[in-house]
Length: 288
Image (cartoon, rainbow, N blue to C red; front, side, top):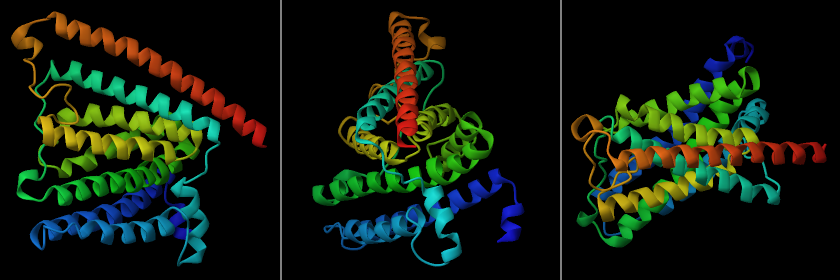
C-alpha cells in the first residue's frame, strides 16, 4: 500500500479507473457475444449482467468486500454521493443543454471533415425483445460503469490534486481513446468524446456525484442506439444522411445556421453550468 501511494496521483487514478471500467465492460461484452450466439431468442444476458452489475457497484462504488483497507478509497473514488433534491433539475437541465451543444458541435465538425458511420449488431437478425433488452442493459452498463470509472475514479482523483480543467482533459482523452475499441471510431471523433466528457465531467465536479451523468449517459445511449437502428443515424450525426463538407459545397446557409445555433446553445449551456456550480456551492455551505 505504501508503494502504491508513492505513485503519482494521475497514474494511480488512471490505473484504478481503467481497471474498474474494464471489469464491468468486458463482462458485458462477453455476455452479449454469448447471447447472440447461444439461445438469441431469449435475452438471458441482461438478467445475468444485472446481477454482475449490482456486485460491481457494491464493490467499486460502495466499498464493500475485501480488502477492507481499500474500502474507504473505493467509496471516495466511486463518487456515488447522494445529491440534494433541488440540484437534480439544474444538473439534468445543464447536462441536456451541454449534450445538445455537443451535437451541434458535431454538426459543424461533420461539415469540415467526413465522419464515419456507426456500426452495431444487426437488429433484424434477432427478436425484438432480445434487441430491446440488450440495448437497455448496454445503456445501463455504460452509464453506471463508465461514469463511475471515468468521472469517479479517474476525474475525481486528478481533480482533487490538479483541478477540474486538468482532470477533464485527461479523463476526456482517455474516454475518447477507450471508444477506439469500436472499429469505426478514430481520431476524427476524439473532439466529440472530449466534448461529451466535459458535459459529464462538469456535472460531476459541480455536484460531486456521478448520478446526474449516469442518468444522461444511459438515456442518451438508449436514444442513440434506437436512432441508429430506426434511422441509420450515428450518435455523432445530426442527420441520417451526411451533408457534403464545406470544401465540397462551400459555406452554405445550413452550415452557418448550425454554427449560429452552436454559439447560442453553447452560451446558454455555459450559463446553466455556471448557475449549477453556484447553486451546488450554496448547498454545500448550508450543509456544513
